[in-house]
Image (cartoon, rainbow, N blue to C red):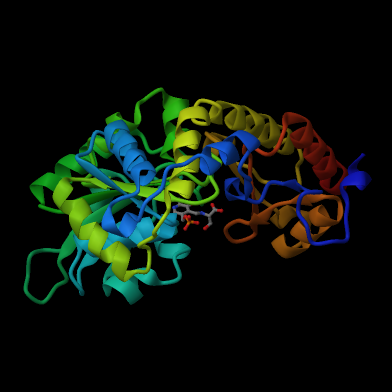
Length: 355
Ligand code: TLP
């Protein structure tokens, strides 16, 4: 059965693709919603479907306004730009997406300096952040912003405890700093904790959420914040090349995703708990099961005696795709387009290769 999935062409359809929840493809029903979308020129603010999506997200997150942007990276970078002046410092966790996977855009686009803190499973606490705030001296950078990621990708999809978010929020108010949430996978945190998106978003000045990860839309992220924040963000979206025209076709997929695919994220979490649990039985792999809270697992491969690249190649030759994790690890992500049966097959491959 596994060999049937193997292919020499480069199409990934024949693989069990656990590289990311970004690999999902729009379903027939989602495509139908896209085909039917009413559109207009969104640079003129005239696309009714984009406007509807923005209103829905603003309402879900309890914010005054929202702005549709092409990617999670652009969403984050626009928010950083609005919150900061060149030379400012932004406090963030060492493993966060903003710092590691956005091509150095913090320096390139906003000329800011990241002040990184090593968290526990991606979570920085209020004491660490307090110590990282610069004294107000003319020869020091201004600490303008704290940014957190929920769920935390590189830590393995971990959830930021809301009690710690509340403490950090208080600190940001007393220190007059902004507070940004990279909520690319906030939806995953919500289904797992039972908290609403609004309950999290209440604490932040700006929130970015993705539609094209676990929710399965082909494209798109949304920024939410105050009306004034979003007006400033709109200018930077245009400057960064993200002003789209008849984007309603894409926004329709986002609306479909929001309405149909949030609750089902639970299934991805169940698939991941099973997958990680089965892999954790193999002594040659290192897995922190406490970090397996949503749809991601980081798998340490040092004890296999192989490099992560070699492990990825071995898995690929057996029809299973993963990506690199942190140092000496690989990452697997469950999503809409991978079934429980496929997850079970992937477990079999791991047991055959590394058991
Ligand atoms: N994450 C991607 C890769 O870039 C690592 C993935 O496969 O997980 N914030 C977080 C927390 C993310 O995980 C990502 C994408 C982004 C922002 C950026 O989103 P996009 O890819 O839409 O720019």
